[in-house]
Image (cartoon, rainbow, N blue to C red; front, side, top):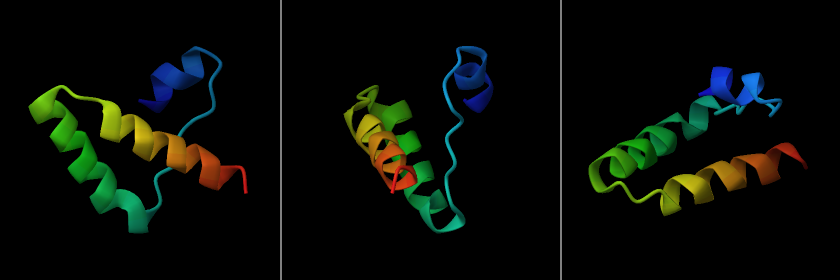
Length: 52
């Protein structure tokens, strides 16, 4: 994921150890449903946290 982002001039995404389970669960739900809404919400929250 980060390789694709970086190759397009976008900063890498860092998922902390404490967020890893939530990330994996959200990612698996996306794979199962093909609905990316929760994944986007998770990633947007990561971005907001990194800007603090």
